[in-house]
Length: 547
Image 1 (cartoon, rainbow, N blue to C red):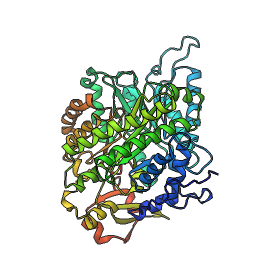
Image 2 (cartoon, rainbow, N blue to C red; image 1 turned 30 degrees about the vertical axis):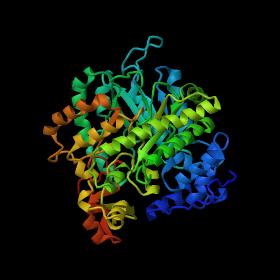
Image 3 (spheres, rainbow, N blue to C red; image 1 turned 90 degrees about the horizontal axis):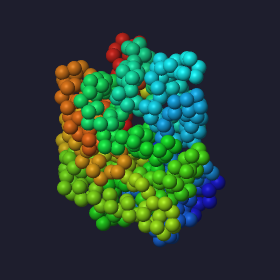
Image 4 (cartoon, rainbow, N blue to C red; image 1 turned 120 degrees about the horizontal axis):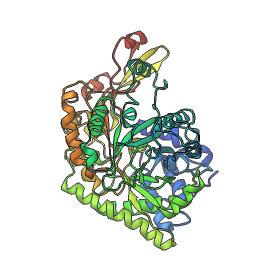
């Protein structure tokens, strides 16, 4: 058990904004055995555990205060292991598949070890020879990268991360690999599989544990027939996604959510996020970013890792990933639309400078290796719920939600006013018509992509951001719009490190459907029942969770 040492005495605890955030904390992160019953206690325990060997007491006290106020929140793995004996603080690991018997077996071992420590896994499969290639030594033929992906997918299906959560995997293949065409259709599931997924999200389907993306590594690749077909598939099914390494073709490794970037096998992400919506002014932003990057640097010194090679890579190529959340709320609180405004640009410049300085100052003080990279914008889904704000750089998902869940032999639907929308409208006086949701922006994807590209200028790794699209076959997403969408993507690709689409209704079993704020408010608290037989006769239920 980790001994609790309070380092933020006298700092008032800010309550959770929403009951949802409070519930997430008590279900996932509270740990009575370690003396963690409140958010404030978790902040105290975590800051002491990660930083007490490396940072001054004064800096730790201020850092814990910022965490209590939800201005900086480390990623979920930090929070989960705050009071536990293990110190598996890293969210994800990145590997490069080696094309040999030993390489395949080693990749399986790496998946087991990383997943069982609580980390997700991203793998680059571009070095695996194509299916049907002659194996000179044995006279046999190669299985190809897709077979290896399927094998790793099944490891993910059967291994809970850290014994506590669903596995997260990512696989990428270059656009010019001979097996790319089969790869591009790997998740274009038959209608009967989609129907089974609609009834049971856990029904096994090909590569269902794995997010897949195509690697585009040159400007030439953006003019290929593969790129155009990939765009169609992404608009229709959501995958493959797009991984852009136009000017850095050696940096092909990504983590499960694709915001972490590396050229080195067995590298790892190390994440935490600034909450723009809670930071009072630009001077405070500089201090929060400075101390937040120090925290992550401390984590890079003390975190346990699942493989020996991970320790060597961390020492030789140290990285932290200080990210962002609450960006859309920050804009709304200033009555601004979903654009990178001049004021936001000034805040991003301070974020960039202070995040590098904090980690570098601590490295020089300790005489340890400096970081190669400093900033990475993760989805920040769970921690944004704790903070009661928008995730990452994403727009607010919805103002009203219809939640679908199975109870016995019936589907039940509950209407929910999105808690942040209610807070902004009812307590902060934000006009409802100012709040553009992901559904609203799904009809203006260039604005979404430009927003990501503008922020990427200040981020030296990647940004995980899912761009919602209307359902395939609708007015703004159909066969006739594919060419225009491909043109928009190719225009911005050199400024991006990755891009992910989510068409409405593309995956079965999705729990959330967007509804209007007024409808959710009118029906809030009511539960509606639909028999399974009814759902079996309908198309795949819509819902654009994607976060």
